[in-house]
Amino acid sequence: MAKKARTPAPPRPVQAPKRRAEPRQRKPVAPDRSRYWLAGGLVAVVVVGAIVGILASRGGGGGNAAAVAKDARAVGGTFQTVTASRSALHIANFKPTVTYNSYPPTSGKHYYVPAVWGDYSQPVDPRQAVHNEEHGGIVIWYGPKISSQTRREISAFYNESPNAMLVTPLPDSTPGAKFPPHKPLGSRIALTAWNGTSSGGHGYVMILPRFDEKAMKAFRDAFRGKGPEPFPVSSLTPGS
Image 1: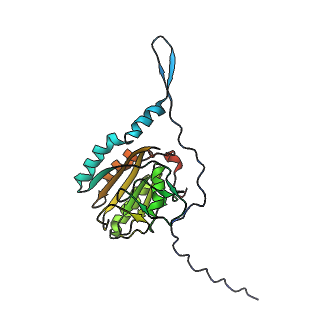
Image 2: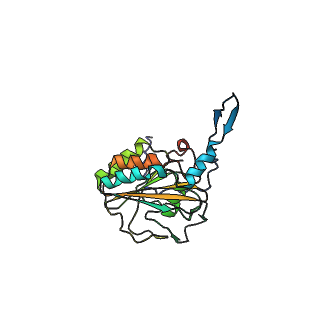
Image 3: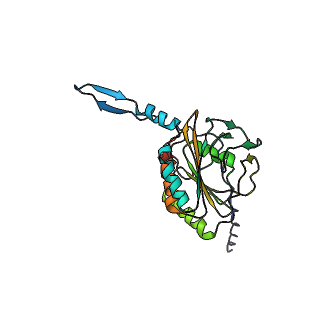
């Protein structure tokens, strides 16, 4: 007797962004240490990590902020530096409403585990994306009115160097998150980063009227991997 052909299973619906069940156990980046030879043949070990800590407390990447701001304004965009909160201000669930000092957010209270790194077509909750920034990630936010061409350009930019990068739409309405007075992104693109130490630092916000590879690359290269709880950029891979 001939076997009946199996009916193919219906396609699965698009999944919402995943939320981690447990915090990752990776250790933060250990401070770099370099050796300098002293006159007379003596060797002294200088802890470069201490110097890095001092620079980070002044805003981490701040020396490049002026150049990034120039690139943003050259294409009609804006660049903002804000004071960052201390790190590890965690919320255990998504019930609390959190007030941030920038739009989109760069630091402050956030969900206790970060979002899975990736390029999303559905919104990642801002209260979770802030944790990705805390680990040194760059978040690319895009408004609901961007063109399909702009969306493809964003994905191509992400795919070029995806580690420690999170791409997410930012709807006009964001329940659970309050921001200073602002104009919704609409057809614009925003990039955010949190640089500094566990006790402070700076947040950076760049908003562009359209996709611009030069400005976005300048922002990414200046501020990625410099969060208050940094992880090696090489370890923050898509899907992890």
